[in-house]
Length: 115
Image (cartoon, rainbow, N blue to C red; front, side, top):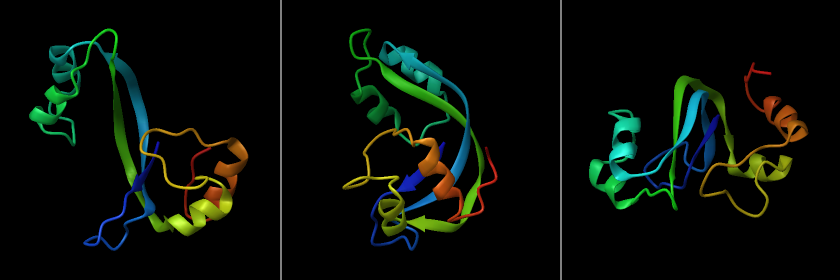
């Protein structure tokens, strides 16, 4: 899993691909209590934000457990991501699958060693 940092005036690496993680598990939470149990203390969201997601069986929330593998050096700028076709038009606001040929091109921009 590759992480894109959205625009931030305070962060030098904003609008770039910055981090690599390895997905351990992905599952759907079908209630608020299920969501809170599944994320435990491993979430970037506050408890209030998680509760506001209002997970239900009809509108489940995806929970992705991952291990941090490392930070990219160099990070990959938005301009490079657009040029090689990782993003088309603008960056996504959620999870996006990258085609294999685009991933191969992306690997040449940084020191990604995963196949």
